[in-house]
Image 1 (tube, rainbow, N blue to C red):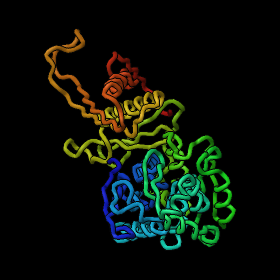
Image 2 (image 1 turned 30 degrees about the vertical axis):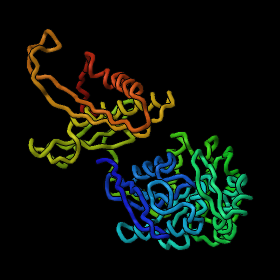
Image 3 (image 1 turned 135 degrees about the horizontal axis):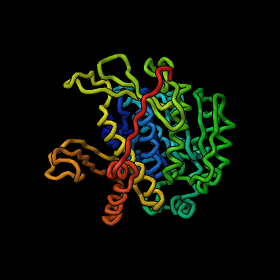
Image 4 (image 1 turned 180 degrees about the horizontal axis):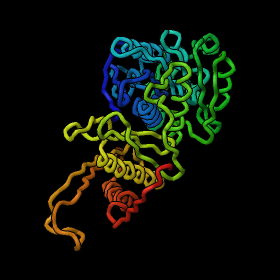
Length: 417
């Protein structure tokens, strides 16, 4: 099972249709979260996408959407303000409540962080709120408009360029953000709060995190993002935020509660470092437990050949090893080259096929094993970069192990070991 993504639409605060993505975990979600992006950004911004995908992989479904007038959402950005952003967030929470489950976690990046702090009081089910490089007050964004403020005041509106894009900012936007003071709202939050902030953030200084943290009452936590930039443009920074957020949220929404399957009896065999052991599960004819001392998996055969299909087959794990190693190898190479690879997926199929001549001259012709591998690489890459990644896939260690002659040594252990 793999993570899923659904396209969603719902009416926003001003009646326009808002575009959203719902990132879902492979199984039943353990909790739902709502993600708010930063000023003039969109749901597809790198931080929003990466954090949502990572949380989904950890069992938390995440709805991220474009505020009115941004991204793929309808409406006119010039008619929006901080108040309408709050109302859009409440509308998104309403959609989740009516169609899936109300969000227990609210996450906001940059100005979206200020928005979730303001909206939290209107979303009763939310038990945990996290901000990422957020301003302590929405008025902080005025520094982005400083060069055009006089024109906005005189003409009522002006074209402002932010991040290479031009937006119409109207006087009502300035008036609205000046009316919002978050200190009292944060003090009365009555929800668990986690503040992420990078001390080297050049757009929103670390002082904002201090103001948010000091205004809040316990339970509250602060996590420094070290040398991360404001947009969390490095993949590892976004993943770090998602991992910490998932672990932290488990204290308040129970997203990582142990299941009966996870509270298993202690393994009957001691596993030494660098090895794994496979033993019969005792629950079916072919069911096996795979234990490396830290992780426990199950293998089985399909019902068609006498198994109970409680886990992948041995050949399924062989294909999984090739796919996992390929994806990891491509990720390491892409990161080292600083290529904009967003997501990697490797589809692997195993089959036995007839061969006229065996690769081994000492063996008679017959059937050989063939592993077919399809690469799915998302990102703004050139054709040359994609071809290079295809070449790198053939250099993954498991691929090379499978292609060369190998040696398997089998020993019979004494009864008492």
